[in-house]
Image 1: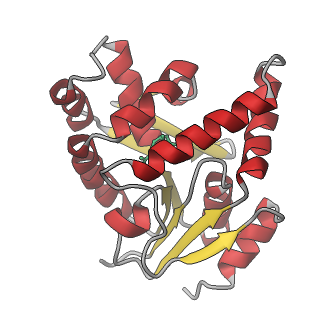
Image 2 (image 1 turned 135 degrees about the vertical axis):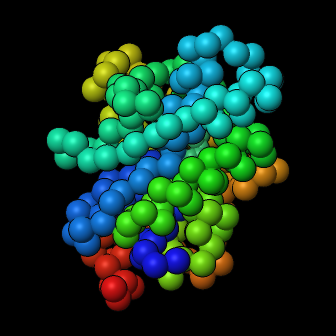
Length: 220
Ligand code: DC
């Protein structure tokens, strides 16, 4: 592999996406948030009314993806066959279905190829759940971000309440505990600390401080 890959894994709202983006800016690397790939596939599955138990058809959707992930206006956008699907990815329907879709071994085999292809094109920061363990186990720099679940739930709550003032913190916390459990106990590629990863607990760090902590371990 001729490109540098920095992998960042961690549970939901551990700050990996903000950290990954800022880190990529500082290093002049491309940034790939792999959650977007699972979300785009899941959005298309739902749009085509495919049954969530129909692994063959679901895998077919992922095989047909033709993705481009790029920076735009201080964030990431994702295009499939040239169509920008970014605004569709965080609906309740997609968020509810994506864990189930992402748990299929067949889906993960296809997304692995997509992620490897994207990562070898240029120097890359890639974030997800299994990047350092399954997708680029050979990466020189691997990180695992985490934070207390109550702090992560508060971060998520602060984002959600801007969109819907009726959201309750307790509900966000409970759903986060549930999602952590699902992502950690699934049979295929469960969320875990990759071998050789530096663990950073950012319970009391902001994004800038977390990036500084990451940079202390990187020599490019
Ligand atoms: O990071 P996120 O919430 O956008 O990810 C969406 C879902 O996709 C989440 O339920 C876990 C799954 N996912 C995964 O299994 N592996 C990845 N590398 C990235 C995301």
